[in-house]
View 1 (cartoon, rainbow, N blue to C red):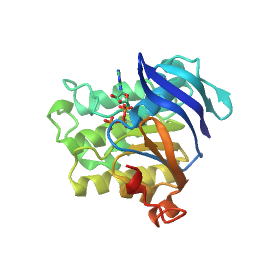
View 2 (view 1 turned 60 degrees about the vertical axis):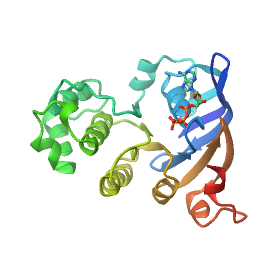
View 3 (view 1 turned 135 degrees about the vertical axis):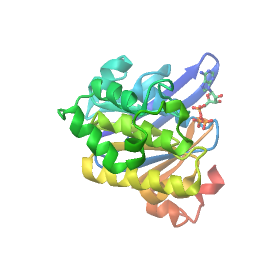
Length: 236
Ligand code: ATP
């Protein structure tokens, strides 16, 4: 279980999060929805230890990690696939995967981990020696997800995995995320602007607006129109 309690993030005078409380259950997908600038990335970045926390607490399975530096959080099994396709662009697909595996906490040999990636995304096997920067947007997102999951994280933070991708690729990426979560029992938090998509795969959802939570509930309820018929779209 990942818990965030009354979390505040401030970049100097800019208050990106103003007291956000939420929980993510093990083995489930939790969605964080919101428009551009709502604070989704700041929330994920604060959880992984790279945004300035101005107040509140972050707990992993009851342990307060708020004061831990980012590498220590990664060692506890927290992985963060950031927005903007951050890869080593000059390095090949295989080299990116190998680097990610090196940081891993999982006891799986490299060959086996690589074989699993190629089974899930055969195109990454075909393009193993291609520099990551030359992949298409969809292939880069597949590589990012593979790098994040090759480590066998216990908690996985995904920042806008659908960003800039064609609908057919988005479906493929989301099918992977759903399947992976079910099989690995990882605690997954997805930040998304595409609300319907994220609500369909998640159990619970939180809607952020200008750094505050404005709506939360089971994803099924929110998809059906919200508790009092309130549409999520009204809050985005
Ligand atoms: P996006 O989808 O555009 O990433 P978001 O919901 O993830 O939006 P954040 O990126 O968390 O939102 O931004 C929340 C607020 O914090 C915005 O007003 C943004 O301008 C501000 N902000 C984010 N990062 C910084 C920073 N490094 N320095 C100053 N302000 C920042």
